[in-house]
Image (cartoon, rainbow, N blue to C red; front, side, top):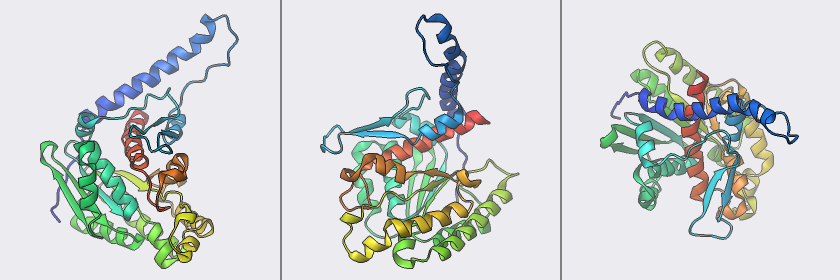
Length: 316
């Protein structure tokens, strides 16, 4: 693997962050005065918190999917947090000089497709998807114009992801972004929630060790966990799959994930891109096979990731 250590452009991140910060600041300072200048009785205004916006960030409405419309779309359910759908130019600025690693199964590959589409334009979607889904293998992409490198690491099991993080530690290098998602294959081909929990704890220990080792030498990477979408068992091809990907086994594996301390909501380093919440919002009409969803779900997850960076920067 070609080693490339690059850092997210602070200036571009700051520019993007400031827009959202100014919006929030205006809301905080102006909303309390609205009640005093109106003669109508209205609820007491409440300042918008970053916690509220962070939670609302994954609250999405999808339209036109059920009808299979050519102009299907998505948007956030709240309008008072200043969320932005970044265009190609803005994404290029944000990711300028970055090294991005995505490790996981087919859900992670679909995140890669949306990520590259946001950089290259919608006309490249099918070509990128076809390249990625030719085989179960690694994939690398370099966009020389902005000095960005993306590595997709085929890692359907937690142990695969742990080995890759261990390799980063051995090479004393670290990407600017690390996205990991491993659960579906664990449920299908291992089907042992306890073992899954042990593997996740080993992954967590290696990630925390990596962060500790680089803390004094460079900025820390942005870490995202790619959650497992809603499984529509009625659409799954076999009884075996319907059983192994059913709610009962899923809940056992999800409990192990929460107990692993990987996710920020449980005190860990990874912010979860909640594909379960997003796919559930999109609905059953958004999937043909019960596992993989319409590109809108993954496009919105990638934009959520971009906006998360801004929210976190405003908290610093």
